[in-house]
Length: 367
Image (tube, rainbow, N blue to C red; front, side, top):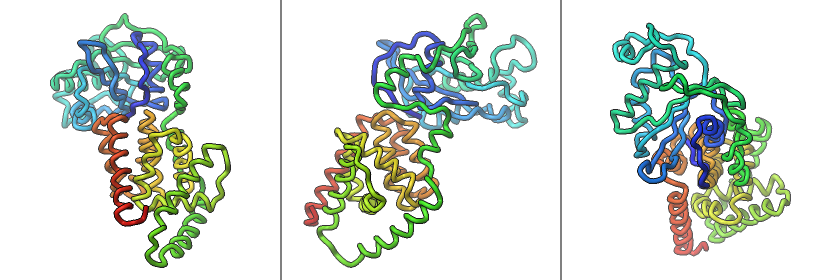
């Protein structure tokens, strides 16, 4: 799920809409069902969230719409949806015994008009959303999203064409102007936040153990203030293009392991230093050992989501989930994104968290 663009752009033609999908997601989807929510139909229709999920195997098509509604889409209060299937024919067309009766109600595999692949899926999902009061405004199929690929509509056999060039779309231009990147695949996006190397992670882990032992020498009222200065100094240096040493990066990583420092650092996503801070968090995510990585991954996810880079935020949260599934801030951010909380509303939460942390530090005499 992603929220990437706050600019007003008109997307009325299916070819243009399909070309925009990779940029709305943050990567080029394959073998996917993409759901775009629509709101304010009586006034000026606007897009809400864009969600991608793997195409289900044929025997799991039944109930797939209810599964989508039970997840984040059910909390969006959408008035309508646009469905986009990206992928070729499934390997098997028969439904499983457990849901064969319901599938036959929609199935066109036994005869009748032939249409785009995955017609059963579109019928089942559209029916589930219709029963929930959500209209399917359009349903499109395309084998892959690239310039010149042939697309088709599920509802109208005469509705078809070729995908416009995704690189030349108005959405791509707006994203580029905002500094956003569209990745070639979801795996490329995951690789961006993947560990740099086992050797680096191992070396950092050993150094962090030593630094932690040095810091655990007793109560130090000035430690938090020094940690904050180290974090903000590092962000400033990144912003000016100055290089940070490995020791500089390790000090920042250790500093934000204190949740009070981390919560104040959330505020860096709201100001002029947001880009530099996010670059620092991304560097640390790639180098840090798993336990310490979670805090900077949460900072990265928060910053990315506020910029509208929901796909990058999701990739960072995936790393937290694998390393520390009970990580409190990671869970809160995941729940907020799934609930459809806007970046603007999440920014308010960040300001409150930073203010609370600062007040606590002042009361403790550490700030």
